[in-house]
Length: 327
Image (cartoon, rainbow, N blue to C red; front, side):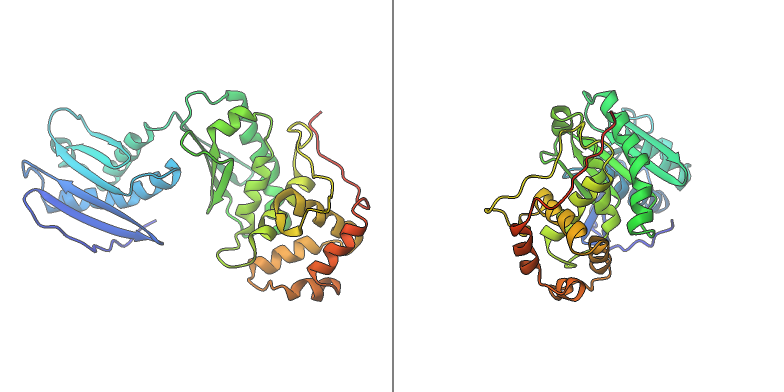
């Protein structure tokens, strides 16, 4: 895709030029250093254009706290073509002179890709998954299960909840990320440590890909509702919740529907069976359209969410729960 480049800063000093571009709220900057003045404006433009095409995508895929200010040094002997890592790129000044922008882009991506332990793309029935691992100790069996779960479940979630969802998803297993997993845009970031400790928890894919399908944007609704829906979907559509020893917790008086995740998900399962089938899918649609409000509950069920929770607390056992299993 062609992009227009906005030069918002230009530092003029011997052998150095700084350029910046905005992508949403995130800014990427490149400073080009050419100590020997061996390059020229045309080469600078090619390098700049290649950087803005390649590096923001690398940073998104790279995962966690990737540097956005980059120094590009034009060098002579130590680098045959391009060497690159987060925040630092070295380009052979003789090699780059007569190369096309396409060739420079391709070589820059190849150089950046070497920072990952593995990189692969797979396609199946119109859906694509890019898988990046930054963990040298990632179990190949876990990698295989994560990929298989994506292709097994994601198309179902897209067709069921939001057929406008992307068909191109990125998985990144990151050693620096310390939570469990998170979804942003079309990327899901997995904790390498978590996957090592919980190798059977493949339905973390179901929960996180539902976040991609949700695509609510900002200020669509409360977090407890978003996460409750994602865990309800994991319960209903997960491929092996038994294998990961995952289940919805029994009700107790200290709970609230605002506790989120599995507690909220069990409440939703009760609502679907005792109040209104299809309620959760309707709420999901309203959130995506930014039409959800606290009044949505009364409009859809005749009661407020607090009244519904009170009803649930009086008969929480009135729900039949069945968990998916690969066995």
